[in-house]
Length: 102
Image 1 (cartoon, rainbow, N blue to C red):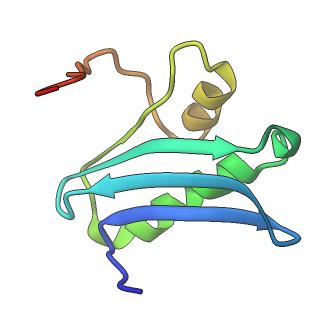
Image 2 (cartoon, helix red, strand yellow):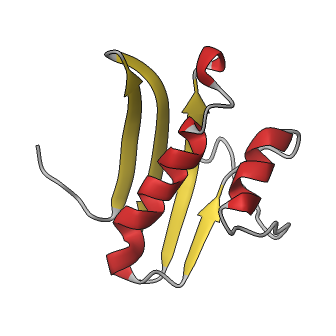
């Protein structure tokens, strides 16, 4: 396996079972983007999501990124709270382009 320090793809396991994942990408110099955080519903509210976010941030610390975004659905109050407790602040300045070229 090749380790790429610009990516943040980590899993959480309990007793050999996959219970959480986080995916992120960075450009390696300025910006990181955590775009997918999922925790098995049976394992939520146990600190797994927080641990995944903190682990990704720790892995990126040597890159000295200027800005890290976290993607969270507007209606997902628990994830919004988790990111805010991790030091993120809410922005409403993102645009998205879907189905480009399809």
